[in-house]
Image (cartoon, rainbow, N blue to C red):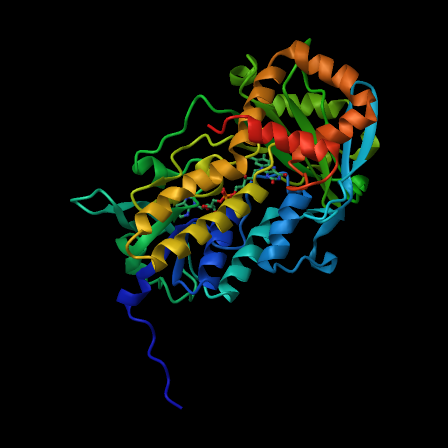
Length: 440
Ligand SMILES: Cc1cc2nc3c(=O)[nH]c(=O)nc-3n(C[C@H](O)[C@H](O)[C@H](O)COP(=O)(O)OP(=O)(O)OC[C@H]3O[C@@H](n4cnc5c(N)ncnc54)[C@H](O)[C@@H]3O)c2cc1C
């Protein structure tokens, strides 16, 4: 039998598409590109398994994406199912099951990002994606004449695995290497240095959240519901945001809180102190005290409502947090990272197969995102603006929560879970509102 020669460095450094970052957005994009028959190289600065600051909660919207990608989600592999949301506030404790819809599964999941992100990227590799771990992208390679991105420069910043794309000789650790591709996808998360280097900065007319989280060993580690606490107080001031307690099923709870930048308090809040004060009011037997904390309290930003645009420029497409796609209503980002990855992959596959009109197809990507989320995110921005006013927030928690029908409607709206066509009255109202509201 003749053996295939190992791929040359030249081939290893070239691909149809380079995806920068192997979070949920990058893995989903790469997976669908490989399934479309394209040669895809993912460059990821960390090595798996790696952590990511997150609540680890997945709504049915995210579960749908996992099922579509063929990710194994067996409970034996550490995936914990939930049946809905428990909302606590205004003296009310309400359990709302996820809506039963034809378009979405009827359950959510919890899974720590350490395992979640690795499972996703391994699924993408099985589809044919080449992954180079420990490779930090340092900037775009540009065509002098057109300013178009033709690849990226990168450094091996952690020992490489045997991935066929980057080999970890000691002398390579510091030297910069060039990777070339016909198109590049920025899936490098909230700070998206690659987008910034291409001139795409964050928009300050769009909402931004900040959230902190940690883990505690707790008897509450198994829970059929994702629990949200709507009342976070800064002295006498009710803050726009919520706290969460998600059972990890492994003896621990993921506990955290997030706030929106629409309140005056946003800039001056000490998030760790707020978390401590909030948890001080919990029953001691739940174990949310220092001696049961298993991880440091860590925080990060949630870029919401398209807070970086345009989503396509000069050969570069933005997916997930890089494109600011977190849902402003509830802070959920994983589902949108994966969905935008699927949309981007479809657009790229089409563009690369139609030489003449390729650029036109690529330019349709921002419009396709607007069609999918634009109106809904505009509504989300208005919602976020409204609850930035403590009076509105107080009114909503005091009076809204005691109306189960209103709350079921609100849950569908906040989690963006409606039947796209038909459905019940609340589905139709939410869809109509999203359609009527201008996408911006
Ligand atoms: C505290 C907190 C709680 C949250 N809770 C939830 C939740 O419960 N549910 C939910 O759905 N969402 C939640 N989110 C949002 C969610 O974490 C993000 O929306 C999601 O991770 C976005 O995925 P992404 O792939 O776009 O980016 P990321 O997950 O950030 O992945 C980006 C990847 O790019 C890599 N990278 C970055 N720069 C480079 C570079 N220069 N070169 C190579 N690689 C690079 C990173 O290492 C990383 O692997 C939460 C966010 C925070 C901060």
